[in-house]
Length: 260
Image 1: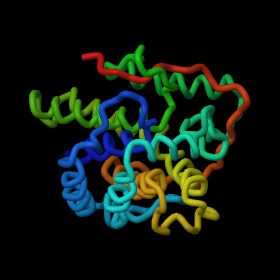
Image 2: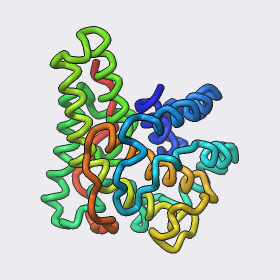
Image 3: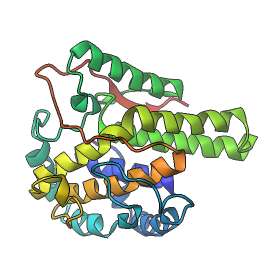
């Protein structure tokens, strides 16, 4: 559990507590593994010197302690607070969907972006889930997909060798997905989420300690993404975009489930 474990944990932290999905953060072992793997990731060559994008925090800030502290408020409190932050319909303050941060607001463009994300999922053996329907551009699904790619790369490396075509394709897909999708909007979502959940005034306060479990998730996210960019050689985004949700959501896609 190193990179893929962090992706799974972050996805679990931002998912609706009542989704019915297995939550790795309910397992005591997960927290010890997160702490140990955070120390390992901070020492990966190139990570300490990574150039930060607007809204990101240094990799040295990757520490699960705040999330653990606020996670322990219990299931009922987390579910109540989740509704307060995200609402019964999509929050306009901090929408958890990539295309709600696209500067291009035409619905056709946003639908094409969702189709591209869904195409990534399908190409690597993931299909929509009938039980948990969600748009393909939800932050939790994008995090889960990165965990899936890393797991597939590890499997290919173990069975066919790290230089095999299968392993190479998975590595390259990680870099492409970070560049085209996750890395450019995750800091903006995290900043918006902290303003909504922790009452921050804006980007200049993102290093402040979190006061909620969703704020703790957001703070971890923006210290983890630069680590991933360093590992995958992805350049930093140059701007911190603002959410621009439209009245009509793009075409939806179900949550992903393993196809193999």
